[in-house]
Amino acid sequence: TFFFLFRSTPAVVFWQWFNQSFNAVVNYTNRSGGSPVDESLLIKSYCAATGSAVATALSLNHLAKKAPPIFARLVPFSAVAAANMVNIPFMRNKEITDGLPVYDANNNLIGNSQKAAVTGISMVVVSRIGMATPGMIGIPVILNYLERKGTIRHLKWAPTAIQIGLLAVFLTFTTPMCCALFPQQTPIQISSLEPELQERAKKLNPPPTVGYYNKGL
Image (cartoon, rainbow, N blue to C red):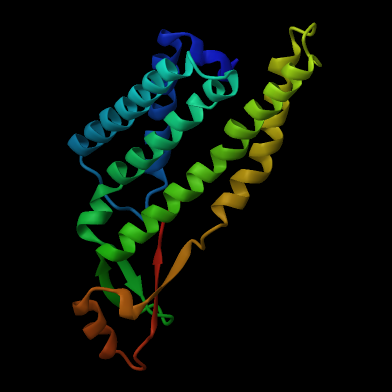
């Protein structure tokens, strides 16, 4: 099962590669609007995210050999969290360099803001890690507790069944909840935008104090 894959180095490498390949597709398709990404950037993002996940997992796996079992079970979460912090910004780097369109409440374009892009992508990173937290931390803690109590000692099928069942429950609730942590059309104070955008906002009638941008998912 997934939470025991840290025991095999080939399994760590394969599953981290597989997971980050899937994440790269998700991050690309859920970027803000239709922001283009060139092929070289896609390759760099893919290599950086996969490399960070594998390196983190292997490093923590080595440390976990001398640590309590519960620490070892948290290795996959640490690797996934680290990879998310690399994968998402890389896949959406075009938004950071070009900025995201910011509009006022009347849908008038104020301009493209790099600050809005950085803020929006940071929100997405937090929500993605939040989605993984209950399943990848809660389940190992529960299994560790049950094993220490001897509850599932003689039930070889129990760990797998418990993991699948709990994971289904967690994902059912955490995915929509974490997507809803931050609004899709995210408000941002005009005063926190770049000076040139603040000047453009002052020329609108009436001058807005809050702008809105699509942060993506």
